[in-house]
Image 1 (tube, rainbow, N blue to C red):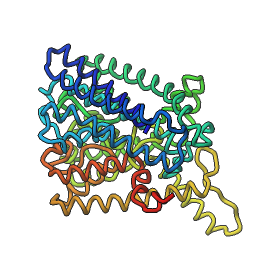
Image 2 (cartoon, helix red, strand yellow; image 1 turned 45 degrees about the horizontal axis):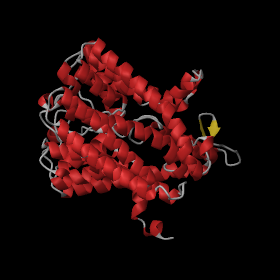
Image 3 (spheres, rainbow, N blue to C red; image 1 turned 60 degrees about the vertical axis):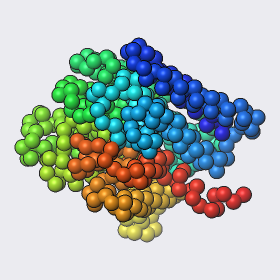
Length: 475
């Protein structure tokens, strides 16, 4: 609870930034953010003071519980400005928007973004920026220690024991935060250089680098009708999906690390192939041909694969084959240790290596074969963790799809809604939640189900699902 108190207090302090934005714009909503910030900080400080005498260090069980509780608490308080401002009709909508923001999903229930108060637009961008930064630190410091879904492949040597996690995470998060801030600043400058207004540029920079997808416009990036804006977004969505530790290593002079990383090479290759396929679909549908088709294909493929969720055009108009294609690639995700979401490329690599090893063993029973990742042997327990993740992902997807279908959704919306929530992508398929749609028309039950799916996908399934096992609570 000590860590949760610190995080909640930080979130409350962050609410003062959109209050200043509204104050500068002479908008009365600054009082809403100031009030929500004070309430949030008081709660966080109360948690911190009440638990400051608690023993330091986390067991695996405590780390899992802390991670889930911290995210739910942050989302709950992050929803206060949305609810108190009246821009959404209920706390359910406010919680959905906050969950979508902090998990960098990008699904929204707010309409009329073009005329929304500036502080509220800034808060949406800031939520995704803070969520993206938190996700990176969690992927580097917490998930490898918990050995979740093969993440132990990225365990730093300094994290050999749970007791080392907090001080070491603080050191690493400082370096990553500086890189994150610098990349966001460069992205904002690039947006302004191609014609975007300063306020739009800052907010879109935060949500682009965080691969979140919240926009200041109802029509998302497409409302700018600017090819330069789209290319800037493509570049920084890609950069946000690369492991941020590689950027830290580059600053230390180790430039070769990003060039030889197996995960980065596989991710880049996958994007390249997917963009070409998307380009062909756009061309043969006669909606976008030539270089315009390439741009729209690159933008939408990168946006969906990285889980950003920006939209420049309705790719559903490219034909049924395009709908199927984008539905499939939404599950891919970017690299581990980045702001991206989804299954993650490294898990597909481990799966392919495991299959290759098994085939070789069948063909040559007396041979000795080992699966490798980044030039190092993959331990059997890592392969087992990855296999378990795939199984749980499929089961979670089926369960969420069925629940959404039973709640009254049509089949396409239910299937794509479950996929976009678990993969933290944002837009789904169909007229309601598609790239040109909005999640506002859904019922409260459907929004709570999707919010639960966002949390489940963002925390890599195991962290949440294990809390429902009676064995977890036994001493």
